[in-house]
Image 1 (cartoon, rainbow, N blue to C red):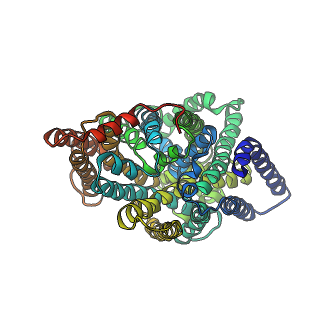
Image 2 (cartoon, one colour):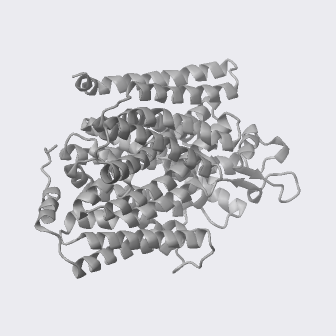
Length: 577
């Protein structure tokens, strides 16, 4: 009864929360005008938001299995859409996407197209059918559909590999933000960010993560939109950046001619050829539809209809940020070309030194004349979104707001990923395969212990900075797409698919993708057809499909019981729980 009352009051609760957060930003802005130091503003923003998430985590703590794994299956579609959007819009989307568009211009749109298009596949091919199946995890579906423990085991390995890769990127993002705004070393910053992640995901599982992610979405979308609305008004006089950034692109084109830029921002295929553009888009689309931490969210809705509706809402909430990312990149580049390039190096603003300490900005006097030329400025793509408010000369409270939004994006996704990994180990491996008689208390204790262990290992890896955030995330999409997409789609739509085919397809797809990724990125292996390592799934995904189909046809057909199971999942009643 108390839960039902809470669900009914969600619009009022989050409405008050949004108003309170906006008032908090306004108060800090006023205090800045009266001389509150910038460093204090950064500390207040990060401490207040992490503290808020911690309070939600504590309030939502639970010891019930269905609440811990699937939030009691009571999350309304709109709020599940916000939670999915927050889970989805990771540090890669918030921090990396506009930065990549800044660095690669038109070619960076491969990420926008791939990630957005992937949700069409989720809505059409995956979400409603998994919700009809029920249970808790993606390996649960593989175990039930294909029988035995082999497909489930491979699913566990693939889920851990893809989620671990992804969570390293999120912790990297959290480390960048905390190290910059708390002025602490990056290696320390990743563990500070990690502490914020663990507070809610350890205490309340999916229930705490769900309500925290809704709160994080509100903060991150406000933090993303306010700076570009401000810059759009400054540059064009119209505060609608999504419609007005074409004017900024025109000014950029003129400045590019004056500066001798060889890869113009709006000209396609200057940094990435057509083949790699299409390959990356393909991998990101398919990977989106196969990420275990996203698919788990559709187990939390009350019905199949609610699962479909929540996909639509999540796409809308994601659209708000993705539609704005190209404008963010354009206004940021215009500010750099107009107000930074050509400045005497001795007179560069303070943000240059601040970001240089984090290792994301480098300035060189390439001409020896004491002037900053375009070739002498190196802006890491991971710094663009966070540094733009300072580059544009906006009040520092906006920079703090953006940092809070970036941290919300990184924490929300890391929460979901860590939960996926711990669930794969505690539920799919320990409970389903090792000790089915384990008590609820023991299962949750193991889940929380494993979550802590995995999180610390991921933070240790992130501290080594293995690659840029967006590249690491793209690896995770290729691995997930190659391992899961053929087995999930054929498992729902082709009743002839059997265990031998699924196991062979998952091993070949996942193994080939991992081999190509490691070979090209870490071992110096020659690229096949010139495809970059970030699109390694280009080979693994079709290989998985072909292997699964061929092996299934060459081996014994599934039993009638399995075929009946496929039929029951394939034709869900929309109002069915």
